[in-house]
Image (cartoon, rainbow, N blue to C red):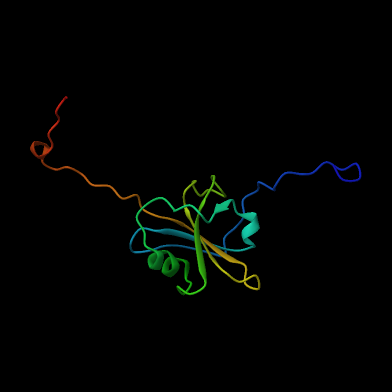
Length: 119
């Protein structure tokens, strides 16, 4: 509490992106003009889904130089926890892209190829 005022938690209202798109590879991208401090990002974590460093930088609309990539620590502004957070390493240009990557999975078409044994 500062001078009798209670600290107000982060504003949970929706933040509108400056642009949104879906790439041909199925990545859903939302770009924001705001400082990284407003995003619950962990830059020591890897994002969920199928991606490469280059594909995330390209989807975000940034070059691959001076880009930091992390993951959301919790749901944020409609984006699920684990989504990629891509940002420029530059305080003068506070741009952030949140990229929801497709989940990598495979289907087994031929059940005979899968064997189950008990030890």
